[in-house]
Amino acid sequence: MKREELVHNLKVAYARLWVRLKGGYREPEWLVAELVIPVITLSAYVFLYKMVNAPPEYAGFVIIGGTMMAFWANVLWGMSAQFYWEKEVGNLEVYLVAPISRMAILLGMAIGGFVNTVLRAVAIFIAGILIFQVPIAIYEPLTALLIFFLTIGALYALGMMFASLFMLYGREAWHTASLLQEPIQFLSGTYFPTTSQVVPYMVQLLSSLIPLTFGLDGIRKVAILGQGISDVWLNIIALVVFIVVLLPLARLALNFMENLGKKEGRLTLRWQ
Amino acid sequence: MAIGTILRTIKQAVWLGWKVETNWADPVVFAIYYLIKPVAGLLIVGFIFLIGSVVSGAVNPELFMFLFIGNSFFIYVVQIMMTMTMLIHEDRAHYEVLKHIYLTPGSLQWYIVGRALNGVMNASVSLLLTLGLGVAVFQYGLGIPIQIDWLNIDFGLLSLTLLLGIVCFMAIGFILCGINIMTSKVQFMLNEYVSGTLYLFGGVVFLPELLPQWGQHISNALPITYFLRIVRFSFLHQGSFDVQMNLLYLVATMIATILVGLAVFKVAMFKARRDGLIDKKEEY
Picture 1 (cartoon, rainbow over the protein chains, first blue to last red):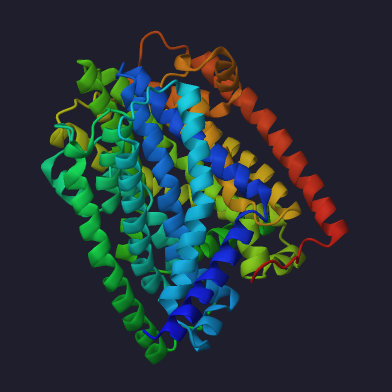
Picture 2: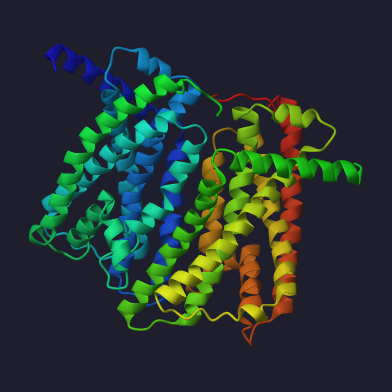
């Protein structure tokens, strides 16, 4: 890629990032909802662990899971389904006729979405820790940050890949995004460790196909169980592999689906 | 309004709701969609329970039954709230048909009832599938005894409770419709707020006695608490349970909810007509 082209696409990413940042704070009622609603759900699961007398670190697992779920929700609704919304409001065709990389738009969305979500996620984390008095044991903060950022990278790469699918979707976009919530929460072990002996082997196998599983497991080990890099190096490798595989796949999928959409005339189809 | 007109309005609304909900996919994909979400929800709480119990050293099947039935029947709340919060937004801003429905001889209220009943239908299908798959996974797959005598369920009591509960949840839905008609873009969060609050305080997956005192007061004021208690009794027949008193509380909270729901909706429609909100356009 030429330097001029690179600068041009970075400007595109910045422009989309700016819209995302601005939009994220335009409606304060959404900001409040994104903080309060996850805490309500998390509380129910923490009480469920309390009902069966589970140790307090399990409440910590729930808080970490709920915090990371904020990013998954952003990936689903703010990245994957975004091209569907853009199509519905008539922006997608503008993106497609502009002399810009689609990946630059997605990069802008991803960074903007991440910045917006990180503030909400931190608030959910702190609220959860304070309300439920969860013990935190971070001895290697750099390891925790490394796993966190690798997880975010893998999740948003996955979101970019899904975005190509959603570009052609009609109303099924809504249902598909909705469908990728509870099943992913279950498979990735958002609220419980999938490494438990209780979880069947098949479920563990399926869960290993989701980057969030490795991220959650790693962050829990480092933030709640007080473990270090020697205990989570496999998680780090798995997350790096996800990023390396998913990013080029996202680019390929985006080109393929755009061409398919052009052939079938579905890129500007609304109200499906 | 003539009974015939009301029934025709409800029938058409149910049919329309069914089409809107289902015609985006072929029947198999649709069935999978309606199965996977609630089953995944049940699996999440089921595995939290199991893992937590194993770590603490004791699996209590009675507590498992508590969450199994509670979480399964909570699908009625989820579906009715989802249908009724999205309805105004979709019909007004997305498909732009609310003004046409408002102009027809059939009342908008009965149209909303019909759409909500479609949500009830979908919830019933999801419930049956969830119960079946839940038993298969937890009893036959993971060895947790599901202590339900399926031939000895008190169907009379269960039907009555379902009827009262559904009317009650629809009344809450009318409050949300009223709020939606006067606002814009809050439909997603309204649904989550209401469902989440009912999930936390309604004794769905954990005993409300675990809540702090103020939380227990909220729990006692919610119809979902009594609804789920009676539903559980109709399945499990716990000896010490006072059915009549719980039915009385359910009816009382239902009447209160209906009165509030209809009042909010009427005021909202009056203001919407006055302020020109019935055909308000949003982002589409």
